[in-house]
Image (cartoon, rainbow, N blue to C red; front, top):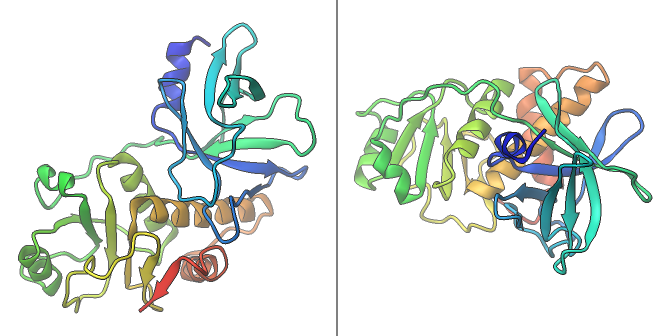
Length: 269
């Protein structure tokens, strides 16, 4: 593989760093107590960026390069000294995985879910509203509904989704939408048809604002990607153990993730 093909595979992908288990599963890495998990983005300029909010940044992941001779992705510190290397991305089910080459100690892997099936979505509000940075995602949208009136009165964008957060398909759909629309900064996933107020007014971007029924969930794009990514990772791990996550398990998984991994970053309403 040459650098051009590699960059096509890496294009805007966000790689979750996991400690790899012998049974094929992986465990995410938290950067600080009750902080974000370690996720990397390998940028075309050779820099490594971090889309999640973390307590501290790992010094061993500052830069990266492609070793074409050995077919390895090499990660480096701030002084451009190689700290570790990974094999090229390999497709495993719906995921791409890069495995650590000759690990010293616990083996790590980089895992992402690429946009294998890019769906054509038609925004309800014209595309320029993406630049405003805020978007309501809702399933049952009508312009004359209460949600529609809130959107109109506050000049908010609305995107109609096919599935909500009660379904694993909804988690996938919303996560893909967020990945594809990097201009967005704040997201409200709404299934409460009686929405009265602008859902973004009281949002603290360091927290996820959500009610117990999950009919109102408001967060920054980065936090929502992290949350939904965690739910998909749990579903992926269950699949390894031949325990397929059913739709009725999805809200339970979301709440459990909020109460454990996000307990200091959630605001219940």
